[in-house]
Length: 352
Image 1: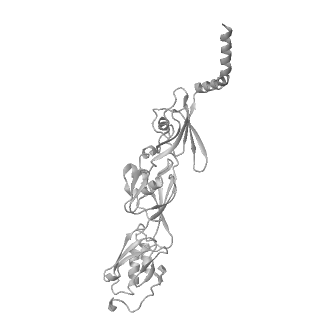
Image 2: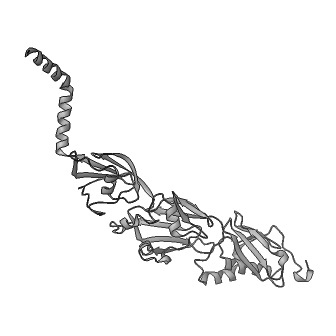
Image 3: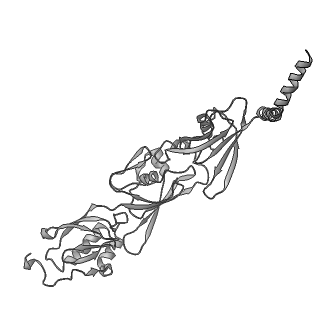
């Protein structure tokens, strides 16, 4: 290493440089339009290249405390900065060491992203999405090359529920810096599905929160959405009562009530009361709702007459008046059958 290339003072290898001294660079960064730039964090692998000091170039890793070990500088905190901010900060520091501190900083391997999904998704919670590779959802492969998107995250959480308000999906994102500030934006996923507006499907960054609220009224397009990647692939429902193959069955997500009855074998001709079909639903807060519908096999999907079903719904096809009478007579006559049989035998003997 040539002596003339470097200043004569050295910095201890264990020195941790605080970002609080980055006043000039930070002030410029806060006014720059970089809100949606990639923010560095623990787990990122970076590539550092010096234009005039190639022997100092090489890979660097951000540790769990947010610092990276750099040649001549020691440990430098980079967490919370964008690549542009980090490059400016390092050049500022290397001006004390190098005559030509120009450098290039890039992300070699991004860290896995942790995003939170809350509200009207099948499985709310915190999810880790890999920036590279393919995620899977049941038998459906979800392309996840590069950074994952909003739709990738919803698919990972099992898809939306039938109550989801897709016209107003809130995305909360962290802003660069240590202040912990966030910005929020509203997205319209219906525009993505119905019109192909891909601006409504942004790339996700680490720390994003996606909130899908319940719609004030049923979404008319929900039936159409059942065949998209936003819906869960399958749900399990119970169809019981006067059906030919009652029990727990698996159907595609958002299958209407009538189609679920048909999937269970259909109603038993004379026993089923087609005007008395009940839908029993258990909500997430533990309350149970019970609605009545008329079974019309020619009825198309409709939120008011043929609603889409959700995971765990129970459909009860009640008995007709004839079935009730028949069952009552059977209940009375069956215990008397042995006695009636004996009396009939005695009568036959006496008539001989």
